[in-house]
Image (cartoon, rainbow, N blue to C red; front, top):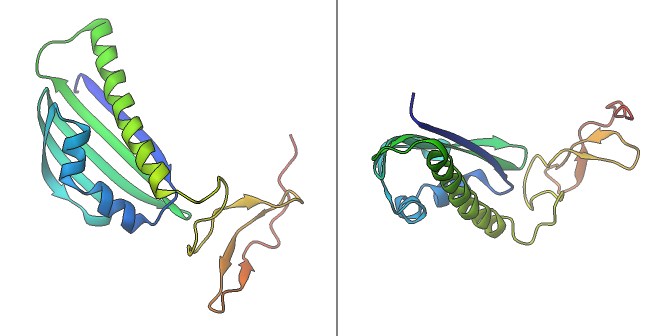
Length: 163
């Protein structure tokens, strides 16, 4: 098992094909991880990329895209051993640095990809829309039918239990 086994999951409310295209750039990942040499070992198109990692650490990295509602969950994995021995608190700081760097870059990308969409609003021209709660407290899902009219797909869904 690698010394560092990191995984992060983040929802990006954007077209999965757009996210795959942008995150599939080797240049982007090299920019995010200048101390790591990432060599693609498996390109999976809309599902992501796997890399072998060398440089400051040796092992594997991966991002996997999972379409969810009107966006995509970006699953990121880094499974590496530092190239030089690192132990104790220094190892924890290294792990924190990798996570913080990933989140900083991914959240900047997320802000760019989701620009103009208020939190909780569905993505424009997406089908199906996100699940939300009506004033009555019942769950519903809306989508556009071929004429552009919104269709409530879960009209008869029972109300959520109150807490």
